[in-house]
Image 1 (cartoon, rainbow, N blue to C red):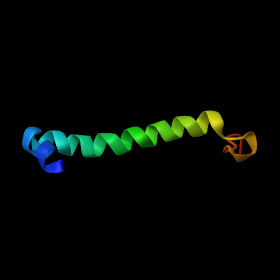
Image 2: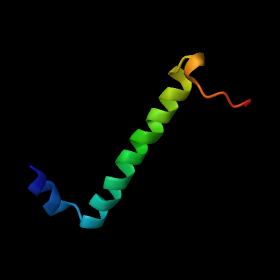
Image 3: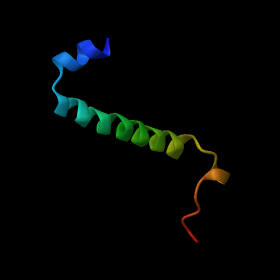
Length: 47
């Protein structure tokens, strides 16, 4: 199946996606941690 995708999608688009997908997951994970981490686990910015 991957061969079928590689034939139809240019290489530069695959290169861009290989960067954007992990970056997007990283940003989503940061957002989840910002709202879901308990107070004792969050960084103390006052020190």
